[in-house]
Structures are given as structure tokens and as C-alpha cells.
Length: 318
Image 1 (cartoon, rainbow, N blue to C red):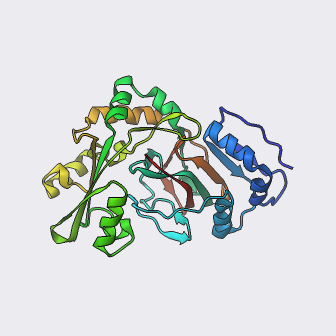
Image 2 (image 1 turned 45 degrees about the vertical axis):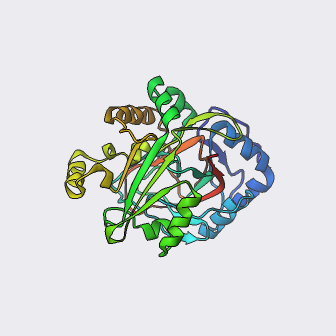
Image 3 (image 1 turned 30 degrees about the vertical axis):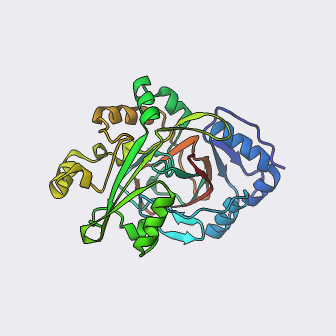
């Protein structure tokens, strides 16, 4: 019998197998309530040294918590479906880092739970840093925190130019009518442009309140979507190509449409970096996060690396 304790400070909370080749599914059957309490307390749990039967075993483990696994709808990054409800992690080149973010915080619909399974740890780097979104919110400068809470964030995306993910991949359909129906159902403004291109706008939260714990969290991806996230030479080159900031593949504004200052987002990135927690992957590790309480990222890496992802428990901003 596994006998862990609740640790409200640990992130991630480490839950290690008590015997060799102990099935990970045993943890859920024995400790489901404890796992949920710990997830609310610390925000993330690292399961280590358990036996898991590959991608299908991972899918079964994530599904065993009782919520249907979610499809990757309205995605912003390239991924490949591994099996029903299981996807590769973001398929960016190994030399690129991915900043801290909460999954799909650029929408008004997001998963409450997300799991990562390290099938193969990289030879060097490739960690999945995490951070407490409650502490990020508290540490954010008052003026920035208030502005984002009051105004929210508007995400503008342009698809079809060849500079970003195609709208057919994002929406999972070839039908423009299906795209329009999805947008109407999710408070997204869509506009078809010349050359089979599409522009969407959606006003979303800058901060959010956890529906169970009541914690207020920093919850947006303005720092990822904003043009200031690009290297200066890339930014200038893209603006030369598209001619107008509104035509960029993606950009972020305050919810009222006014520009977000570069300096503001530099300060946001500074707070995020201060709260980053990096732990080394071991092949076979599984990390379970409360997606509102804990942000995640990716470090650059060398050598083969394979981390797959599952999400569950859909939540919609009211």
C-alpha cells in the first residue's frame, strides 16, 4: 500500500512506486482522493518508477480519473495524434525553448487536467519546467495585474498565408461552414479573406478564478502570441512581408483592442522566469498538472526525445 503525505509546498509533488514494476494504475485505484487533494494543494504530481504499458497504458491511466480525454481543438502549435485523446507534445525544433504557459489559456475553453508521459528522455535538456500560477499572479506588478484582469486579452490569428498553422489543421475540417459554426459557438469572430485565408479574433481572460479552490491565477498567453515574442530580426522581416501588424500570423492586444506595450510583456516574462521550476525527466515519468494552477514549458534539447500528452475535464469561461 502506498502511504504518501500531502505536501502543500512541493511542486511537483513526488509520488514514487513502493515496489518494483508496480502498475501506475494501482495509484489511481488506491489513492484517487488523495491525488486530487494533492493536485489542488501543490498543482502538480510527478509519478516515478511505476510500470506503464506504453502510449496505450498512458491513455488508460489518464482516462481512469473519470473524465473523457479531450481532442486538441483550436490548437496553436503543431502536434500529431498518437491515439484517441493522446498527442505528441509541441513539435517545435529541438533548439527552441517554449515559455511557460497554461494549456489553451488563449481561449475561453481549456482542460483542467493535463498529463505528460516521458517515453524517452533527451540526452541533454528537454525538461518540462513548471510554475505555480497562483504565485505568478501574486508576484505580477499591481498595475499589470489590474490591467489584464480588467481588460483581458484579444488574440488575433491569421491562417492560410503559409506562415503559421493552416486553418484546416487548427479546426480539423475542410468545411468553412464548420469553421463558422465552431467560431459562433465559442465567441470567436471570424473573417474570410482573399486567397482562402482566415482571420479570427477572440477576447479572453487575462486572469482567472479556479472553479474549485477559488484561487486567482495568471491565465493568458499574451506573452506567446504578442509580436514582441519574436526575435527583432524575425519581427522586422515578418512585418516587411505582411505590411501591417494586423496581418501577422498571430498577435495579442488588450481586450479593448489597444496595443499591449512591449515593456509590459517584458515584465511579465521576467515574473514567469523567476517562478520556473526545472526537474530532470527520467524515462517512464508521468507528470499530472492542474492546468489552471500550474503552467508548463519546454527546454531545448539534444538527442531523441519523446513526451506525449493527454488532457481532460473541459472548462468554459462563463
